[in-house]
Amino acid sequence: MANSPSAKKRVRQIERRTLVNTARRSRIRTFLRKVEEAIASGDQDAAKTALQNAQPEIMRGVTKGVLHKNTASRKVSRLASRVKAMA
Image 1: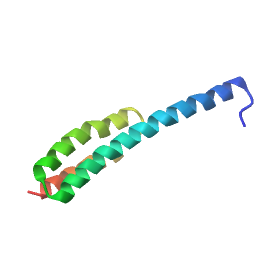
Image 2: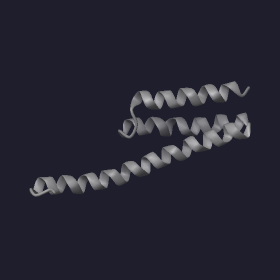
Image 3: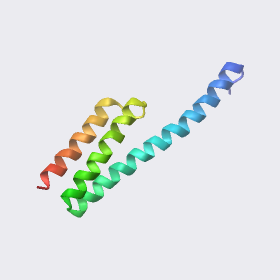
Image 4: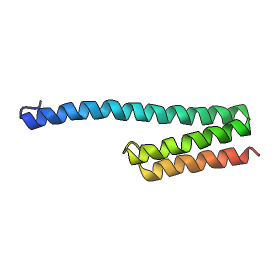
């Protein structure tokens, strides 16, 4: 358990940061789910639109430290190839 004042402060900061990161991660997953649903429905226009909306959100996760850069790039690349294969 944290005893020093600085350690107690770090615990408080981590709690706040965890809430923010959880919300960001959840938002990214929502955008990914929308792309997956559009792909599953077979509607290429909807899938393209969903991917265009999801891509900046995924990359924003990188700048905020929620995702690693390569992880985000891999997700976007795989989704883009799946949308392209629908044609």
